[in-house]
Length: 446
Image 1 (cartoon, helix red, strand yellow):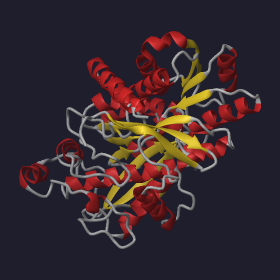
Image 2 (cartoon, helix red, strand yellow):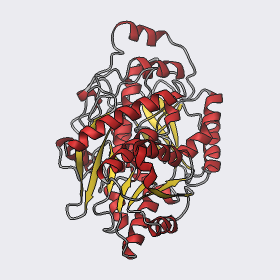
Image 3 (cartoon, helix red, strand yellow):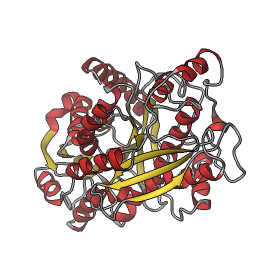
Image 4 (cartoon, rainbow, N blue to C red):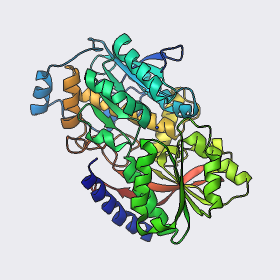
């Protein structure tokens, strides 16, 4: 993301949120696992499939110049046969970030269902997962294994900013795409057609959080805790942009390392300095630990966290201490009573996921996005044709995943799929998030 774009979005966010408030993140060992799975072909969803992309939007790849262009593109077909696509990912299945494992469960369930219904354009998905423990050194091992041993066509849904940062040079050198990265690093929006994230970028998210804090809690003393890598640093940058002149209320900032067991001491230090509002960019395990710890110490502060920690599953980890905390969000939680959330919650339960979480919803949405991209690319699937389809065919505004509020629009000038956010508060008595104000549409289009 360019500095000019960040500044422009920050300005828009500032205006938008003020109006709203006025209205109210491998070793090649035995931790690897392989799943064979895929997506519904054509537009025919089975009776057991979700209301998927075939039902909620259509690709333009089937007609006109786009189809002809896609048919004519040649490129690397490593990992692609007439009946299979080999896709890989690195993901933390061990360590503190293993809390995100429900993302993988949902993706596997979705791809399994797709495969059972014939695959995508006649090809089934073989999904290979390498556990890197959210450790960049192990990530390099994972990438080498996936590219050299497993011969994957592409990477998909890789978890984490520091880990994907470590992987990117290898992937660029090999010409291998990494799509719908599970990270809000703004870098993915400016890295070319072979890289794209899914969630809103962290600078924008931090700006929303900072503006909300400044507007809702004027004059309150502020403490900031963030992960000591690009994830946390970009969030911290955004927070300060959003706070504006209220940055003078900051009593201190503390960082923690990604694989630290907790950051309880850092939180205590800031609260002892007088922090009344805590702004947090953290993964769920450490966030929940801090909430429990400070509650046990009898400390009462206002917590505002990024969407990375926003889940009913985090609330379970916090054991009641998340009540009243505020987070940003862009997808509903399974506790949401809305029709779309309840429909997907039921689908996930019907497909083997007993207790869906917000991370399950993220995985489901990510899988829908990949399905749409692969379908739109058509039979002539190679690393060049899929890059063309990403920027020109698959996401032109006529396809909307079940859980998104706005249709993603992706092209070479906009590689940010989700450009809206909302604020939400956790109500422990209801076991649910409740929106605070209206959704902020950062893209300015619906």
